[in-house]
Length: 68
Image (cartoon, rainbow, N blue to C red):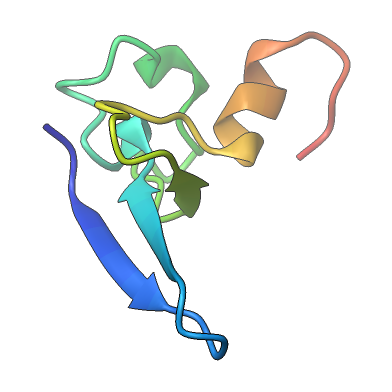
């Protein structure tokens, strides 16, 4: 399971965030799309039953022609 954190919005509702799988490239099946530095530090909002997430930047690198 990847790191998660819960944040309370100003209106009182909660949102769940998960760190990108490429925060640990050695454990990620998408390591080929990690940043050049090797470790991604982006968090994405996810549903409560999500078990893994790939951020928008790493996803962008996985599709041809997208500059991130």
